[in-house]
Length: 92
Image (tube, rainbow, N blue to C red; front, side, top):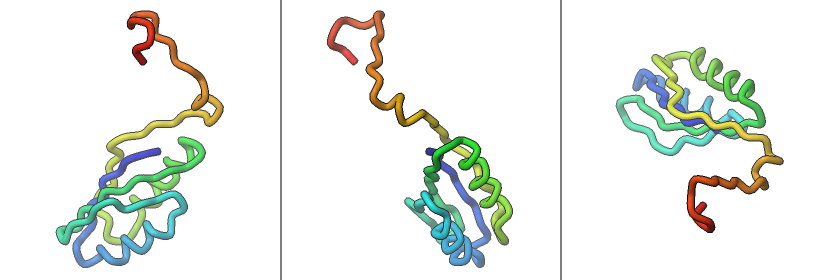
């Protein structure tokens, strides 16, 4: 998953919104009339996230697409219990 701030020219806002809506795993959470969009991207690999980010950079009218947050984890690791010996038992 990645959080991205996309800044586009206001005249291109609708076209950019439509293009982002066409990306599998993309969601627009907020948009301003000034051309700023808060977007999350979900993809199975960090390479796929990078490809989506490159696509955003290349869209007509996009001034910047800034990666704000990224986290990748294997699906099998989601079921692994994390034990931190530095904390008291039961605090996780």
